[in-house]
Length: 414
Image (tube, rainbow, N blue to C red; front, side):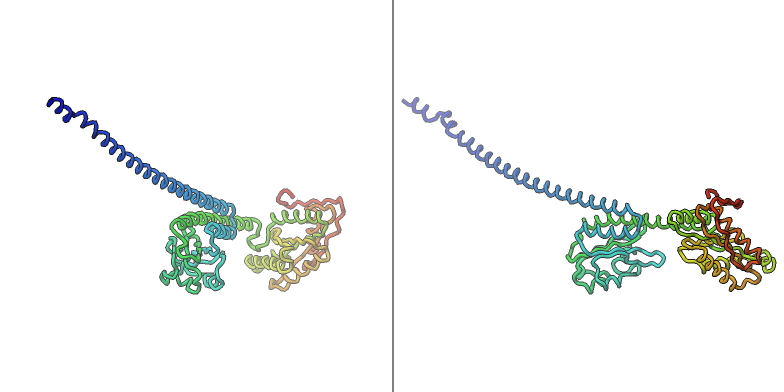
């Protein structure tokens, strides 16, 4: 039967049925391998991502700690206007941050064009002596101050002689960094740190030090401005209290100081004495020799007072015109009379002919007021003057309740 034979040998459906499953299986196998490879790549990428994320987190934590350290240093140095405190705390905080134990801070003296070593830690004695004062432009701190740029040497042995000379006698130091302390575009100082490790200071440490250096520079500037302002203020205060001719304290300060000393004496129950000093014959002396010589005589009285009293205890004043006053804390009338006589004799030895001193002395009485004490000493001075001058007279004893009229201006509040 030919027809049946042909039919069974050439059936296309049977051929297709036997080959398609094998192709699909191959495709599935390839797809499975590709999927497995993709999963491996994904796993590797996830691992890399985790590692990168951990590294990034670590860098963020380190950076955060560094910024916190910078903020702590900035806050620490900004709390004080004392230059010595600022420099010492700055160096300590920087060394603590970088885990170092050797460093120094220099300040620039612009007038002398040199650097002065102000604070240091861990420096050998010979380096301290050598770097105590150094010219701008010389060695590490001088180069930093001159260029106004950070200086980083990662290997001292491989550096040029310009930078290695400083450490040539100390091979234990292998790297160092110098940072300018700037404010308003001017280098105020230099911070130097040293390490025993080569390559200890990288870009990150350098950037951190530069940031810190700026904060320290501003703090130094503020401290200098404060000191300058304070010095000016003290000078103005001194001028407001000082007589320009004799350089003794003036009348205004006399009443303020006398009131303070009397109050202290009453609290602590100690003695206080007052001298009123008058330059005899000043008008005649001016008429004969001129007012310039008269001014010299007045300065002579001031010199006699200053030379005869205890420094930092007693105080002298130009009370007005040709009158002076001396406040003697912790002195009774006998001690005060000795001082008064010493003032009189000292002036007598000066070359101011036909002049002398009349001095009145009064010791503070119990319950006595300021105007009463001044009046008693003033009255004793006039007694000496009316008795021929060139002598010391003590005031009559104070009697509780007595009141004297004192028509001199007492600067208010007395």
